[in-house]
Length: 102
Image 1 (cartoon, one colour):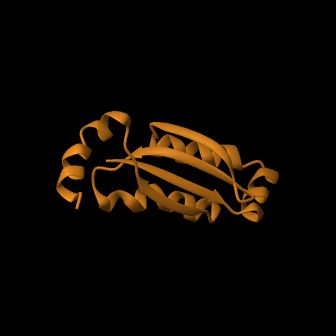
Image 2 (cartoon, rainbow, N blue to C red; image 1 turned 90 degrees about the vertical axis):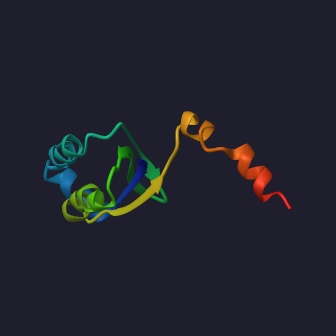
Image 3 (cartoon, helix red, strand yellow; image 1 turned 90 degrees about the horizontal axis):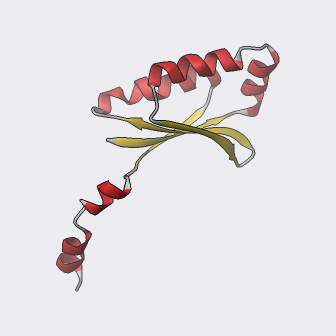
């Protein structure tokens, strides 16, 4: 299952990693381990943020996706199921609309 991993970095911890020169190395190690399908970096509500598309075939792997961010950067992590346009085409929206249109 394709998931959106939304990682928000607290400014204090991430600033410290930038200042001591460890941010890039730590980030690289986590990304190498998780092997995201895509990774984007932005800002959300004044915090540095990583948006990653990852594959999750078993819910027991959630800690593998989240713990590196928690433990390394004290980050906030959110996971959401996402679909590609092809996934949405297979969802059967028309049938669901007919079934649930009252």
